[in-house]
Image (cartoon, rainbow, N blue to C red; front, side):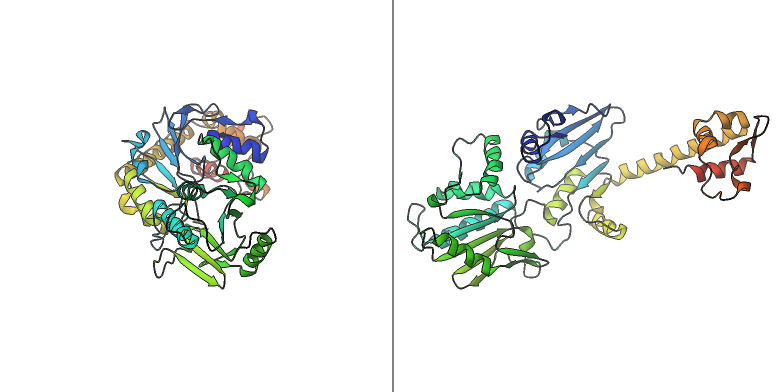
Length: 401
């Protein structure tokens, strides 16, 4: 498993993979792949969850180059990556999670500022030094890993810590160590903070239009905390996800109230918006795009790819297409020439030899047709069918890919 240092630590700790199976690669430094001669790979920061990387593959022999984005959130800093300057990409494997013009949610910095404003509003304070006068419990819903940028920003802005579970803290300890942070912003002690990091869907359900609050779960959480003597009067839940983006009204922040309970949806995403994708592809100008999310049908894949048609390197793609057909023509002529020379040429062809041993044509279902390519006679001589039958059978037995 080739991966970044943090991903390696997570794979070993969380998944129990033995260290000898994990190969740590540095960011922005080409590394040769031991199992694949002539191929090297370079890790580029993907601006996704901690440790995530894009993979740039380059072949020193064919001069081919492929970029696999994995899960990524485009950032303008990507255009400054030295490894991508002047490169010709044969294909980009693109994170197409939000590949539709309706998904034009804000950038991460703006979304994080929305979270900051929500916290400031409900703390009831004019400065970060004042006490929390209305005793509000804050819940921020996240995955096992991801959304940490929000947490680190709020911790710095309001001088707070986040209470987490022991299992979550083991993961976050690795993240903070990778960031070289000396003082942790996460704690197991709920008595020292009014902020909690809770698992995804703790107080919401995911629905096609975004999220649906689970008010009973929030009320239960409030009662549980108050039994510890906290005396909270309100609960504010924050759901950071691009799926809460209102595609009809194009409103960034959404909220729902239920008495003393309030839930905010903030369009913070660690996947690229449609605007991001367009900017990214227009910079890369690859010969081909391969969607990695969605695209279950050919029509859906074509629809996604069509959005970027004006940003494709059409000249390079056309050249590859023509060269490909020329190569096929050369191979076909060579095959016909070999057949012209008779039985010896056919029997000496390694693929023909394999077919003579065990690969009759799929179209051959009767004893009369089992010798479409060649067969042994009683005196071990080989008999062949006419030229056209031989070529025809060749393609039936082993279609060219």
